[in-house]
Image 1 (cartoon, rainbow, N blue to C red):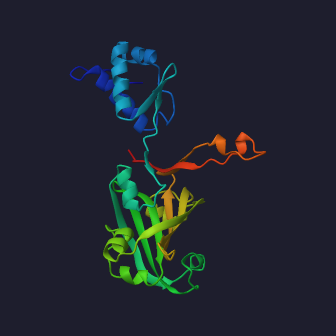
Image 2: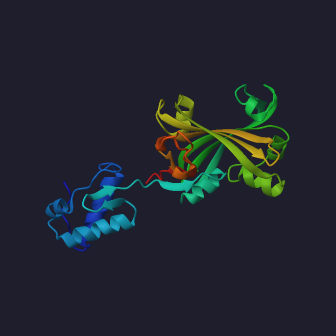
Length: 271
């Protein structure tokens, strides 16, 4: 039951505050329809104008969206940012409106693992630099990165403080090594106990895994990274543009290739 409205605070503010609390607590889920204006008027014993002001506040703050003739619905407040271009974590989080920080968990030379060696174009057991970092958005765990660097790039990062710096900045700005291309692979898995403890989720929770190989302008592998995203904090969206005029002979409209127009990683602010 909604609380009784009290004097001293505008009624529309009390209604918007109550609805916001219900959304943040999960009582109303993303894309769920809120009570109608009539229902809210009856619950709070207020006029339709007061309810509409409350809903307008929530809409302006990004908590809801409204559909003509259908009502108000809970908005997905995860922030969108583009991933068509090659970016690092700090750029991703800045574009998402979140403050990025990192905590270095491992930074040492190790024999190259067998699954990683083909990506880096080295032999198994070749010495590589491994860097594990916990990635945080607004202080909350978002992802765990495991990154491997072959020589000579590993030498450039030895004894560097990598908690608040980026691989891109160090290599590009300090050493003039541009990272101009990358290859991504997206998959899913469940969390093992060690990773679950680091990411502060339950063992067996779903993970979104992004594997990325970054290359120089000459096509040389700079690093291979495996990022374990909390699935409750990130998702991916893509937008395709259909080109009917590009249909080949004998192809139906459904068979037409759709060029990638936009590709978004969607972060949950954790609010």
